Image (spheres, rainbow, N blue to C red):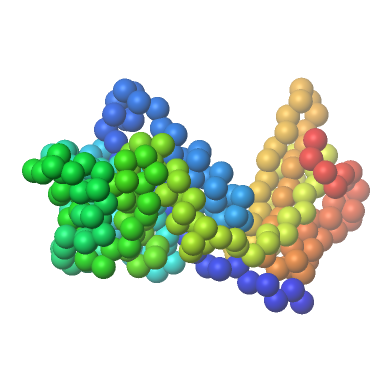
Length: 253
């Protein structure tokens, strides 16, 4: 048996920005993060695009925190303007409200802005206690992270993207390989329903119907981090198809 096990992480993204929801800007974070996760063998469990409302932000953060296997990337709201709530909300949720002036973050801000750091920019160094820092290649004002799994980056893609890569390269560089087998069955999806019910929930199964006029087909895909399991449950479908004289090919249409 293949003993390679998946690291049991659930990845979430929280994209904070009223301007995304009212159409003033278009989001670039989801696609970038998703691409970076997929190339490393990870997948998102959920993605949230939310308004800059502290009580709602807190609800979403707590929802994710309550998943013991969660890894979160939060975009936006870590600046110095009055509507930048993320640092405070992150402290309320993840460090019992405790914040501190992060010495290294303060040094980075002073190096970048000198006397213009005061009276407002310096507040960006006030972070939840015990925060690690993520390098900002644009302005030198760092992002931050907690417990090596809750990451907070700016809303600007030019700043956020390098931080995402830094975090993933350091803590989540590569997942175990997922083994996938796919077939196209020339029948309706309805004919395969009972067979689908035989597949355990921990197995990644997808069913994509294809309709071309009166011709019907279904693309069935089975995947698992255990190669033997992938073959076992893929064979459940091929056995059914052979038994019922349903034609299929071992590739998608």
